[in-house]
Image (cartoon, rainbow, N blue to C red):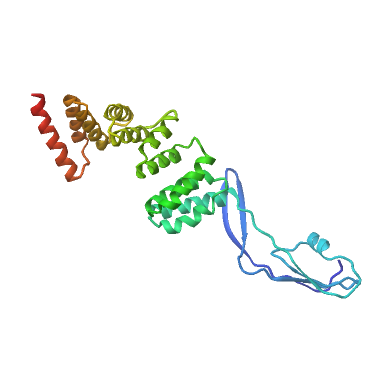
Length: 273
């Protein structure tokens, strides 16, 4: 195109340079201000066109400006959207992590929601579980867990969170049925089954599952207390005494639980002797 005037106003800002191995990749992102007009005047019997765009090259001019002989001027809006690269996605996830550590859950939520469907979809969903749990939003949490389980049926976090939700709803038999259909149960899931049996007043299976949980992770004093309670119901004072003693050794209990454990130990000592 033989053009006498060509006015191009394009704002570009340099955002980041990253060194990967021996290469330096320069990443340029466009300024978010409204895209300027690019006016191309054609004198060889072609029409003038004003093109909306973030960047126009000669090849794009040749494509956008055709050789019609009339003098009409048409405005073509060209929308160029930048791609959200993997590095941008990872950077957004890390920013959300920082906000979560700072307990700025409301600020972290939109960043994580924006990552759903991206390469960081699973990680975003796992962090959203934390966000909704701390922000005390059970409706959104349950919806997230339900949809996430369909997408990631073997994910331990979503399975555990779903079982916890059922437990909070006092659907104890549903907790048992749901988790017993799974394999490779972890300590928390085994303890949830034990707690559910305990709420159903079935203390022998409750004690069995609490023991399985404590074989995997023995540093939970509350699970030792729960085991002691079920063993008392099972008329096993020696096993109950041992469980309460383990809870006392672990420590980390509040004043009420500490007092309760000491009382049970004292009573069971007399029973055993």
